[in-house]
Length: 543
Image (cartoon, rainbow, N blue to C red; front, side):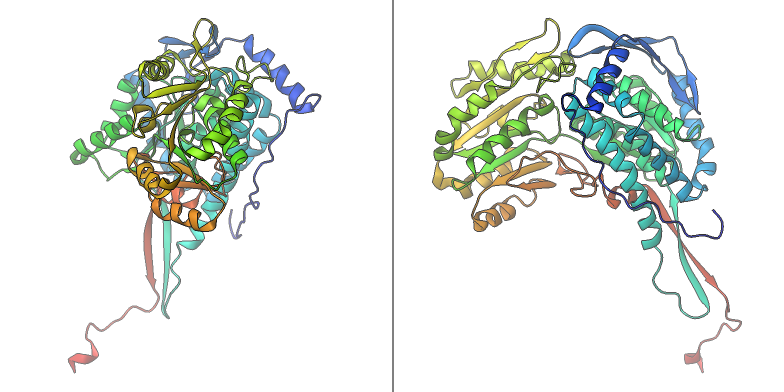
């Protein structure tokens, strides 16, 4: 807008609906689930705002009922990928010069649509597509994404204001043009969080970038509905181009393109490392040095001191490990518990885990559902089977699994004598918690073990009452986690409260949910305007 200074609405975290029996939101979600489960939708590529049906179709199924097809997805080929890149490049001038408040208005509108009339639709699609319970879908595909769009809009304002030079001496005016990157941003998104899937392309877009979005092969339905939501909120064609397809097609073309300006990634460490290598190998052919932002794997920990709140520890172990089947990069996957504490809580812990209900997420009495696909099922059960065969391991909860209808794995707890056993050190990404029981007097040594066992450094937590022990853990584990929790489970970061990201093998720690992430998608230009330029080339010292 002309001749005004705009301040977006002050962001607040979206309240989490409870879906209690008899509630309005529960009945609306149930009705939407019934409607969507009867559909088999056709999912196209979306290029320059237009739907493109390629005819190269793959089916999307429910993980908890893998014979039930919910979508037919049209996969992109070389032509579609190149068309998407060209659409992004063509839209760049229009979008990058649009006033920032106009760009943000689109995503603020999208947040209101998601908070209101589209909430049940998006939550239901996440439940059916990714086997999330109503609670897990609510905090992900509704609340977190609403928060991303609201807070990112305000962070955008802050960046434009804060990057202005504080000093303009007499006779000149200094300013910063906070430009987007030159080229297109390639967003590669995961299956496990619908909010992350939509945030990766939209956070770059808020700052004026255009790009190509490659959704995960396991979340096409929810991601497509979110793409349509952004378009319905007013997103112009070409700004975000939705391209389902094989990594060998979409990724290879995007990563080798001369106009690649950035990569926004959430996924496995191995894939992210390959993307770095691809960029390095192609640097001579690139116009710019791309921004590479990634959040990858985790082997997230809980360390308990002998003097801790034992009931809180038990709850954190259960919730942190088994919500959403452990398919969170932040999920508690290893725990170090003192012998005295384990002796005290073991029976109660095993009893509480045995109460966990597992099944179809459409049944709201279930705490857990299925893991995402066959590949994941086989990988997770491989760890369980090897632990069963290892004399140094004891399975105290779960250990069973069944793939006859859906990819179901029981919440499994493995007691490991070896603190560096494979399930204590390697990312499993499933409902498996490995516990090492250590002597009570070994607290400081076990902190060193925790710090050095895994290549990852994403999330972790310490349970202790005495502040001295907390401070000891904070110091010893300073670089072990990008998100650190004191007397709480290592999951559940909230936008605007705990910016999320880790280092080491867990990514670039660019903190989604904070201005730090948005800063990666801008390339400022410093501008100096002189009102009274000198007319004499000489200096006083020459006299």
